[in-house]
Length: 275
Image (cartoon, rainbow, N blue to C red; front, side, top):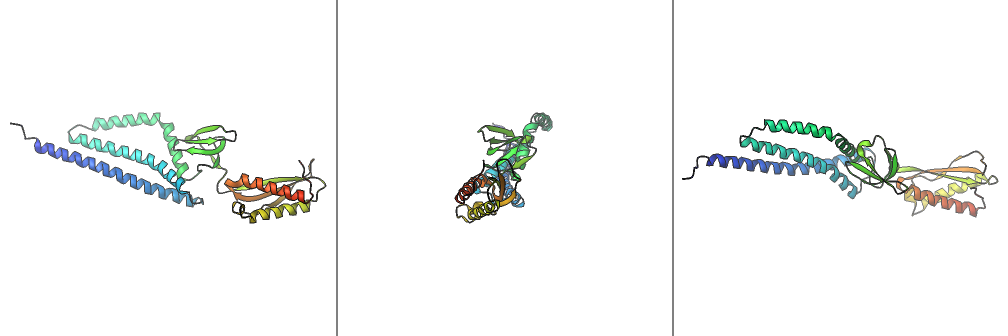
């Protein structure tokens, strides 16, 4: 005859293990849902507090996914470890040494992964605080370039020479975003010594007004470009410095278009420019 004396106890343990498994799965699902909602809310609020424009849906999803993935992995690992320890306790296994061993392993891993943890933490702040986004021109860790990609561990930049730089986020002390919302357009126009400076200034200012009212370029220009300063006489002529606020990402294109229009207008007016 089979021994059925331990059947109730075995069934009870099996039910308890099943309950632990279900609890772990439910906790993991709740964690994923809560992290997704919380991270999205934090990123949107941070962006609004910093005065940033509304993040494009693709960029918002990227940021939420990047931060949420790390939080879910860490939280999910803790949930699984707790569930396993609870299950071992049901079978009468002393989990004290296991907990102590995990503590020792955790300390060892902590010392060995300090740099990696620092990179991750720095990356989380970059994303949560919207310090820069993909496509921005930034200066970090002594390197300047366009942000091609970034994750919690590193930021990938491509400079004007085409070189790709991989910068660990933990190395970023100061992040200078050169394309944050708006930037200064600064254009120097040099006219010859014999040119009528007042007339040249009037033409440049009028050209700036026409650029601002142009249907194709007006949305990129935040204020009318105008001459802000006339430099002292130089060897080749007089320099008229034109400045304006423009959308940061459009600064190069607007500067080139304004330069072209100014040179055409001065040439049509018979005002000679200097090299």
